[in-house]
Image (cartoon, rainbow, N blue to C red; front, side, top):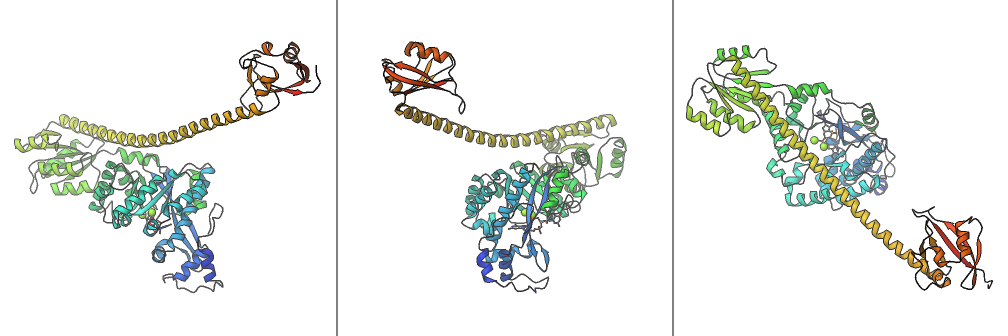
Length: 566
Ligand code: C2E
Ligand code: MG
Ligand code: MG
């Protein structure tokens, strides 16, 4: 297996597999045949796998914010085999458990390696199959991959499929809750293809949803895919989940996703999955999306005009010619709804009397699908009751009358855009606030952990100090600690008895407890030891300056009994 980081330990079970296929006869499998179990076992034994990495890119900064690790089989004859040609077979045979553990270890180690090389604290996402998640040792496998690599858990994201969630929801909640306790992030891959719903998703401890590329593929052409993607983004944000759009291949798709507040994208448009050295090169060169493209997508103010009278639409377009808005027109409510599915629209101005659906009904529908849009009615006809009802329930922001005054109409449209922008900005701030709060909570937890560690350390230090003090008392040599002011700061039992002190010496000055010649020596040059007599016993007194190995100061006196009587 080829990677930039040093090789990982062999796959579990690799030796046994190698024993099964000792001679390694040449492989003669046709290119399109499914791999046999023997072939797969040998692939594991011979470590014929490699990880490629695909960047995830922020829709607000344009920078790489993470990567997904994707496994490839480096087949000796067929070349690089994509995962959809062998993952299902590996799941059937259970070999996926050994391969999955290798993927986890390699991805964690590579990510830690990039962090250590100063290439930023990017998280790595690893795909887990249902079979892996149901295995008994999944927690140990994840914890071991983190432990061995030294990667902090918050930099590992586990991608799982909706089918795992719907298969046995109670079990899934339990498994995910335990995994979350390790500190890793969890996202749902290929979202929208399984059978879960967003309200159902609420039950699981998730961090992100990845919108399946089937929706992204037709987002610019198929209105229903556009509205599904938009609905997923809005609802996921309400559930405080990050949204990643997969399979973004074109600028148009990217533009629509940015305009709809998608958080991150992943896809060939920015980069295909690439081998580790190529990914590293991308990080080093700081590859990113052009920031002016991002801001141009965000800033485009879009207005939808709906009226069944062609000449009204033309007149409105004419007076809006000099504005910077993107103006869309529809000659019926149904066409208006179609345009709303395909485009992000900020302000809607609709007529009331239209065949098929009235303006009030139309704006009510718009409110349900696009609650953030600002909706106005421009009509000569006033069925006061239905219009006031619609205004009171919030479906219509303003009622403008035909014939209109150009200036007045333009001012109202401008004000509607400003209102929309304030609402969007508030929403964005709320989301940022929620994210910041979550991060703050995380930091607080980390801090609490550190404080707990600190308090534990203080307790340990106190205990050690008491032990050392007790040991000092039992040392048979008289020891006296004197601070820089000449005050006795410590003494042991032998010192107290040698000095014949009735009261403890600690806290007294040396002049009060020790003979004058010793005090004189203490205040002078202490390079040579001092011979002196204390309470009728002769001692040689030497000194050691404190503070070389600890944050203490002063001097330690050691009294060696010379045995020479006074
Ligand atoms: P996935 O997790 O949804 O990964 C995204 C797949 O979409 C990748 O295919 C990637 O190459 C492809 N992709 C990314 N951007 C684009 C794009 O713009 N257009 C198109 N057409 N495709 C794009 P890949 O690498 O072939 O992987 C296929 C699937 O295999 C993955 O889907 C994942 O479910 C599975 N897989 C990959 N690696 C692992 C692994 O280590 N363990 C497990 N259990 N499954 C894995
Ligand atoms: Mg994935
Ligand atoms: Mg996917």
